[in-house]
Length: 145
Image (cartoon, rainbow, N blue to C red):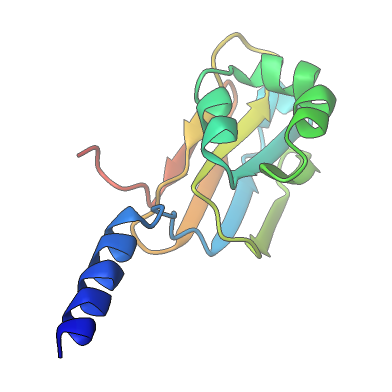
């Protein structure tokens, strides 16, 4: 009986130490007819599967991500996974997310200045990204806690 109690306590401790994951299941992207001032937009959804990789993403503006992407992926071969698209105005795409991640960010390469980065923490498992003329918005994000 005592062994069962010890095992139960160990399971509770281990469960409490489990890393949190995001509930991202699908990504949909809709480019407005005037997206990026009528130009194509490169969009990366980056999944971080290791804590150190997630911390690096949180600080990067989109321009830096796209300039440093190849090196960041070489430095974090098991810590980052990328889904990439280039959408022209009026185009849309939907894709399933096939990996469990600790964190996810969307980066969009716009010709206008700005961070153009958003952390994807969703309410319902789907992130709906709307590319607009000089930036983007994401529908379905969790409210800040």
